[in-house]
Length: 240
Image 1 (cartoon, rainbow, N blue to C red):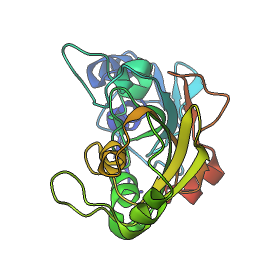
Image 2: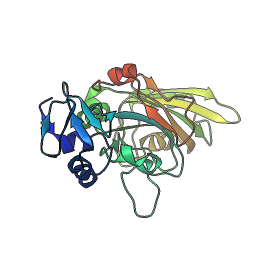
Image 3: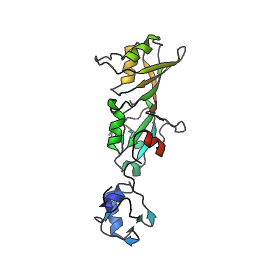
């Protein structure tokens, strides 16, 4: 990566606002290669230069990737004046990095949601042309019959006339609590719910378990998050 301004170097790490960082720099709290620097516009090499803030090293990471177990009742948006958003679940230092959710989950849907500041990463995961699958587990009001499996494989016609891409459907339970798993390649508005509606079933609960080859971390409680591992980032096509 080319050299960037010192204040941008620090701001990109979510440490503080740019105005606060400029104040830190002018107060002599920042060192570059063991030399105190008081000019926020000083250019630093993100790969080679050693930057200290108040004696602590600052490691530059251009992109960040997080896994969130989205709880019910929280909307997938960057901000909202009335409702709690998925970004409200993150600490301020992460929000400062201009992160956003990759795609969306409905308010009453829970499970795996990726958060990043890497636009290309998000685009590639969401583009149907990239064939990145999403696996959901649904609780249904009724068992729509085994013919629903074939209908999903052929691509069901949604309520607006759109023919969904072929999807894989399997039933984990067909009596009592009807539980199904469906793997899709696209993410149209309320798609999974509308697909089941097309075969005569209503989704009572919905949870996303996997995107691509990365599964929801079962140790994450609803509302909890963690950084993706290096292996997970590579599996999803991110930059490490």
